[in-house]
Image (cartoon, rainbow, N blue to C red):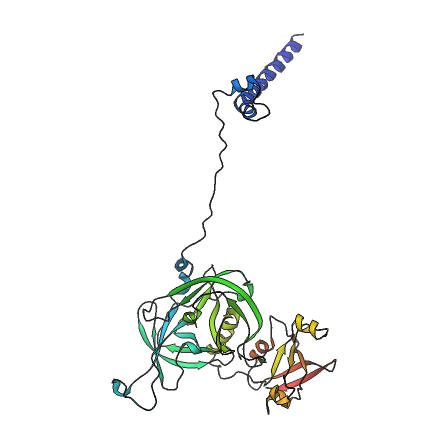
Length: 388
């Protein structure tokens, strides 16, 4: 009997504890909340219970601040940017006399240090390339060095110089293959007389797979194809300079060509620039191959318009239908028997796509190499060996 009474008392005690807690919670939180609502505010007992209670509905705003200092983002690459002064030296270091042939004025251009022992990359039109031109390079630390021109890559229009220095800060190149239109990027230049870096922020507007540096209506097998387009203002001041992503990695180099009687600016993807740098380091800038064709890159639009069942490839083409305007005389292409209207589908089994255009695939070869082209001719695929 005593055990039953003890159990009942224990149950009542637990009930009172939880009931009390429930009452406190209701009194402190539930009733004040209900009394503040339109539905329950008419009940006096609820209003009375909330007379000494203030309910505060607070919204806290959390702001995530984007990095606003461009110079901080580009810190990794800033010290690898140089100013290249290209000029013509007067005889005896005296002011030049007036002659029938006027001398070209000194020019400031932007360069990028690509090796620690002093190899510098610039864009060809950003410096003076005349035979008697001389070069002075101003580095980030304020030092000035004489420079020698190593050569110009005909595929990309990238030029390389060398200064006598060591342990230089080298630019960090990112993967341009991961860059998508709409991404924020920063351009850096040092092409002014102040010898200080200049910056511009913008967007990657588009990737143009058919843009060829030949600057013609047709693509050239010897010129880089496939570039990024950006929305930077005053791009002429950034020629040869790097464009970096918000991780501080170089994703492209600003270039320019004359197209339709106007300057056309673009961005050489960093992955393509790295292939050129590798060739420059190996001293193989003069070893580019020559195939000798002009072509139209086939796209989905072209395939639909011309009712063909392929969406990629390089169509050997001439608007006038003249073979000599599509295949250069005595070129490896002519000697291999390539014809007007042939569609090159692959090079040594590597398919031509918008990401891997013909000219890019050819750039991996050297003079004297042999390769095999897969060609679509009259609806039939054939194999065409070529001696480069």
